[in-house]
Length: 326
Figure 1 (spheres, rainbow, N blue to C red):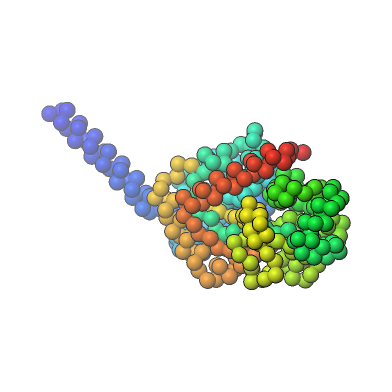
Figure 2: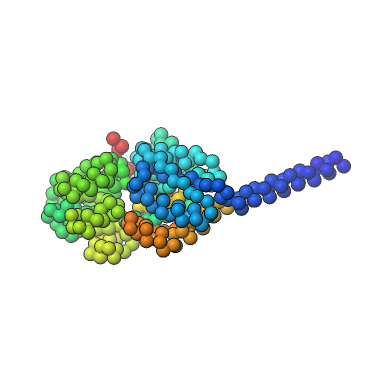
């Protein structure tokens, strides 16, 4: 009798725990959610995050608080996010820098594993990359640009946002694909690099479109090619890298949402549905477009594949280009 009673109690306890767990997940979220942005306030990553998470908070019925944790190319914020409790209340933003470039450039001592420490939720938005030149550059189109730099190996410099930054890797990927010899000049951020390219101190720059779009439209920079599936209405005369015969250079950068690894699937699904709905909102899409970003909203599985692709790309560029973090 004692054994039967104990068995019944154990069964009820187990059932109760399952019911409690299911109820806890069903109630998610029941308090504010924190999203770590691994970069300083005011940049593209921060702006895109705030646009999307504001709408997500409205959909979920809870406030979403953005917490900027900049430093070390996004590594400090990513480290904290990787160590967070997997309960859905501490999330983070992924970029090509945090999940591709950093692991490629700092394989040891990074403090997190880009592929194992996070659970992808969705890609918020994609941003085109672009190659541009100062208007004084002798060539005015991509064909002439290639001819000019090939005719003068080592004579031209290109600006990036820093040694082993995503813009540096874009430049090196271009150099490797085209067989050209252009010299890297590292700046402390995209802003100073753009300013010096506009001023003509360097003639070439690889950039994310938002930093350069106004300068291109003002004709203080000349855009030669863009990494995007098709030509942009804002820049109808700028061909894609794929059009020009370099499909391997045609990948944009992105900003996506992550949860810590081992976050329950029910929570991931709830977050994905809220993000997907937010990214279909016309006001959200318009706000992103003003930043030069295009709403995505792919599935967690699709986003995981994007992360793997960028991780492999960055590793390949660093290895083939023999890039070292100085």
